[in-house]
Image (cartoon, helix red, strand yellow):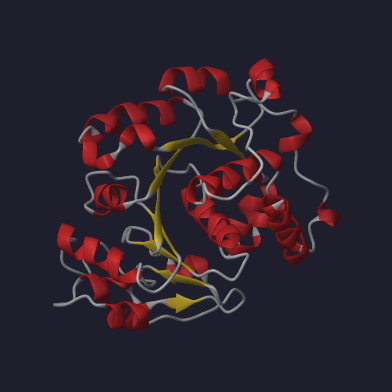
Length: 294
């Protein structure tokens, strides 16, 4: 049975990039994964694959507005990545707006998730920051593992304060979510952030190279640029999904003496590599995946 991972958090925290990196890690052994994004305010198909032209027939909107959602329909609408054939994506097409399709409904979203889960090993739900949007709470409810990513600043703290009351029902298993600090930089007060929100499970440091991958249509090439703290967060997710494996225990931020003392990793861990060191993303991706499987 497929495992469902939901990723949610405040705007600009690196959620979508994390989903791409996580998909690469989870499919390193030729498992299959589908990333689903149903945020019509930012159509993701042209972001994931800017070199391909998609018409409205490829849009997730056609699935969610269908009279009947079944496995065959979902399989027909999944767009498989050319360079990574074990990863498929579903999202809105370029030019579509929040008014292109009828309003999302709980049962349709739930049916989409569970029909897609019949096709692959992992479903990764890349959620909108709007918890009042039907997709995000439905995705959290359906998940085997939920991950919240917050920027380690006042925006992240206040986003969580505003949305936590909306997720108090037991069906959202709020207390079991993993919490990561997204786009963490050396000047962020990581310890203070963790104290204010009840603890952090890891951090996803900012990297200029990762940002460039996101802005240049190469989101699935970013894994090789993730530093050790980002890789530890990915490893923690993998361990939560596969607890039966004898994997090395991931160091969380609370366990890392380096983070306890300074509230952030040493500067060289977040500092970007020299430009001549970043021309081989594929080999770096393989090294990163190898490190996660050790």
